[in-house]
Length: 459
Ligand code: ADP
Ligand code: MG
Image (cartoon, rainbow, N blue to C red; front, side, top):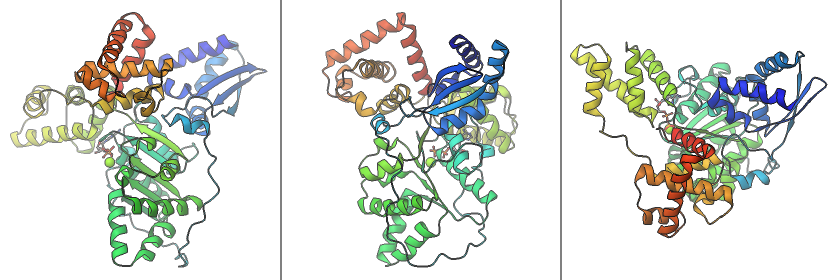
C-alpha cells in the first residue's frame, strides 16, 4: 500500500512540481486499509486545501492502481512540518487561541447596521480577479480567499500575510476588502495602514476623542485590514492601543488581516504579546514569483491596461525584472508610455531598446537579509537559529548554505560574512563556503535545496 501511495504521489508531483511539495510536506500518509486512505495534516487549513485541490486527483490515481475507490480519513497532527515558516518554538507550544481577553468595552450601543458604500481606501484595481496565482503566493492567496469567506477552506483569525516589498501583500489585503464588500455590503470594513492607525491614534489623544477612535476600531468594525504592521515598531503606546483593538475584534470573532514585510517573530521592537497574537491564526508568506508567474502577471497587467504587447515582450520583461512585481509593472507602463509617444508597436525590439536605456544595467542584488529569509523559509528555521550558535546538523547545513549564497551572490567578504552570521571568525566562514562548493558538485539533495532557494531569490 505504501507503494500505491508513493506511486500516486510521484505522479501527482510530476504534474505540479512546485506547489505540490509545499502542501504535501505537511501531510503524512498513515495507511490504506479497507478502502480508507489515512492521512495526517499539520493543520485544518492544509487538510482543507489538500482536500479541495489534490484529493480528487489522488483518489483517481489510487483507483487506477488498485482498481478500487478509496475514502479519505484525516487526522490533525501539529507536530508535522508546517507549510509556512512559523516560529518553530511556537509550534511546539502553540497555545490554543486563549480565552477571550476582557477588554474595556466602549459603552456606546452598537449603531444599527447601515448600508456601506465602497470602503474608501481600497484600491479599485486590487481585486482577486486581477491577482495572478503561482507557487510563490498560492498559500497567501488561498488564505486570503478564506479570510474573505470565499472558497471552501476554513478561515483563520488573524491572517498574517508577510513577504518582501512589491510582492502583492497590499493587493491581497484589498482584494479581501472588495470581496467582503461585494458579498455583504453592510459589513463594516476598516482598511488602514499601521502608519495611518498611529497618526489617527495620536490625533485622537490630542483632540480627546479616544472614545470615537475606539468605537471606530473596536465596535464599528467587522473586518479590519491593517497594512504594514512592521511600522508599529517602537511605538509602544500605539502597540498598546492596537493590542486592545485586536483583542476586542478577535473575541468578537471579527476577521483581522495584517500584512508585514517580515514574519511575526522577526518584527523588531514589537511587544511579545502582539507578536504572539499575530501567530494565533495563519501566517502565510508571499515569495518572489517564478518566471512563468511573472510572465502571467505582465500579461494580466497589459490586459487590464488594454495594452497590446507581444508574447515575447512579456517574457523579456519578466526575465529582466525578477524580484519585485511593482517594478515589473512600472517597466510595462513606461514601455507603453514610450510606445504611445513614439507611435510604435510594443514589439520585442522596441522593448529591448527601452529596457536597455531605463533599467539599471544589473539587477539589484538581494541583501544578506533576503538570503537569510529565503534560507530560513526553505528549511523552516528561525533567523535567530541561523544566525546563532546552534551546531545541530540541520541548522549548521542551512547556515552554511546561507553563507555560501551570500558569498556567491553578494560577493561578501569573509570577515563581513563572519559578522553577519553570529560573529564567527573568517576561517570558519571560509570553511563553510568551501564545503558547500565541494558538496554542491556531488550531493544532489543539497543541490536541490540550493536551486530551490535561488529560485526564491529570483534567479
Ligand atoms: P506589497 O504590498 O507586497 O509591497 P503590492 O500589493 O503593493 O505589494 O503589489 C505591488 C504591485 O504589484 C501592485 O500593483 C500589485 O497589483 C502587483 N502585484 C503583485 N503581485 C501580483 C500578482 N500575483 N498578480 C497581479 N499583480 C500583482
Ligand atoms: Mg504594501
